[in-house]
Image (cartoon, rainbow, N blue to C red; front, top):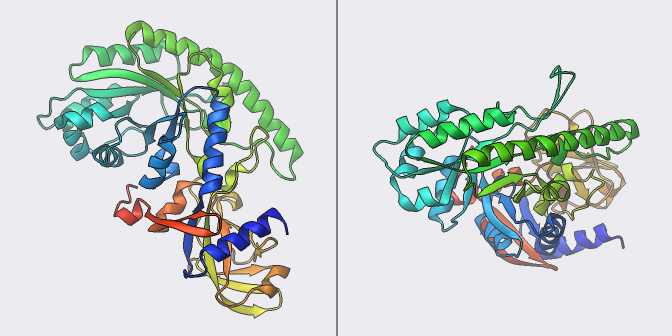
Length: 400
């Protein structure tokens, strides 16, 4: 029996009393992935990205492990909810335009002390002031650096279009704007190199493209190391009490941690190890989060149909954004149909061994987005469901 077949047998035994669709997290794999992230961070603390987890119980679990400290959130509403739930170090990774939430933040000492918001434009500071509604608490802010690789004098750009702040002078100027404005305190810098951390460098069947990605990433790392260090020096000259410099992501933990200018690493997707993280030469995670769909039809030889399945991930549309049939091994989509909203045909020899009611296990393309489809996660240890815990959705929250 292969390791994957053994996992399938465990998951089937653990959930035999449960009807699909359902989602699980394999706690042994989750913990092993957490340990691997800590190892690669080489002593620097890891701030866990909540959008990649979207389950308070699992956020608590990973933050209880040595090497993890703090949360990187994705909306201001989520940040306030987490702070009210007892989390006390929350960095909002994206600018917000939530007036009501800013009014709450500026009016509550506990929330203001726990949450740091992201800015990359003086207009955002003015927006926060206009939204205060009389709240006088000091708002903690973080500046975001654009990490994109730019070549040929900017005519070629590789990387996410995030912050407009690129040079040390630009970030230092915004740091001075924060320092001049009452009611704000600059506490951090964030720089997410998604083109390094979030792009696999070993694409199956595409050796030329894989080499090109590795070359791009090596060039981007060299450029970013120098620029990030210069930015940190420039901002610290304005704000010497800067508390943190956050960088990296699951795919670049070890290289970002090696930079002296970086004080903490962001990571989250690696805990669940979704399919988009299969194609890295630098690390290999264990699939920890899966979902099962039930067989409801047997249309013919070599074909079964499962209920549901159309759970695409965000990003540029393509086959790599689709969930992948994982267990039993050897199933594939019908190219004419793909995964459907209500039903999904699956082709392959293993289909002939599946009966109506059997489970087919899938891996999502991304990590936390799976939790937008399920209200609970079944936590599996060995061949037993040890707990059933709510996702954000299960607690009544869909923040985006």
